[in-house]
Length: 286
Image 1 (cartoon, rainbow, N blue to C red):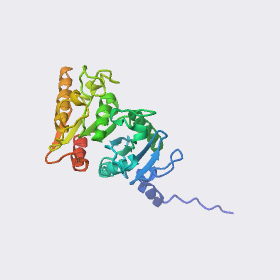
Image 2 (image 1 turned 135 degrees about the horizontal axis):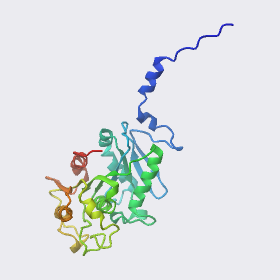
Image 3 (image 1 turned 180 degrees about the vertical axis):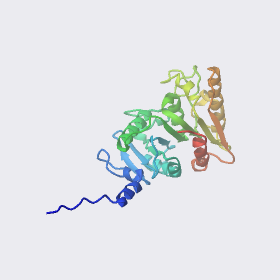
Image 4 (image 1 turned 60 degrees about the vertical axis):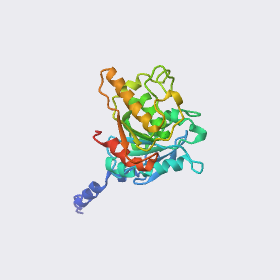
């Protein structure tokens, strides 16, 4: 009996394989879990809850943009606020190919997140554990991240940058009420004395960090009191940028801290967000 001659694999099959984009594959199971692309997804890593958004056009190496929400209102929950903030950045995720991560810093577990504090673990450690889990699911995550925080989240982002500068590639601090100044006479969390990483201030001063604040954000700010330079968010933003630039020059380094004042805007996260997006990725390389 004559055997049938094997058929040559059809070119159509190759074409179908080529049409499968990487973002489709992300929805497949990884370590028993899946991440839908193009939508906000919620998960817990054991220490708290977070929201994440995986773009359709993710880039390698995978890098995260960590979004730190502001203060939680009386009728809000941390995770709902995290969702609200993350949705403002989905266009950036798709354009830049970055994964969005928004931790839910609830009062019970992370009431002191402005100062990187937490009940069981610090707010910064919580971020690291989220990225470790997410990186495991997605097949790896770049060690350095983009970082954005507004108001109370801006305070958190400020202290994260000076404590862990080696983990940040670029950051935007939006309308923070107070800052950790490079002042050795003032104790942490308002100065460098007894800070977790005193040398981190110097390295942070050389990072592309932009402070964004509205020109009308001039309501007196009491937190930090005399330990802060300036009576309101606008004045404090200006003084912190100046002091960090002075620190860099003192150590013969080129300062990259900058200030972006948005004309006609007060303490409003949504109205400041466009300027924050522009500042975070303008001229930034991956």
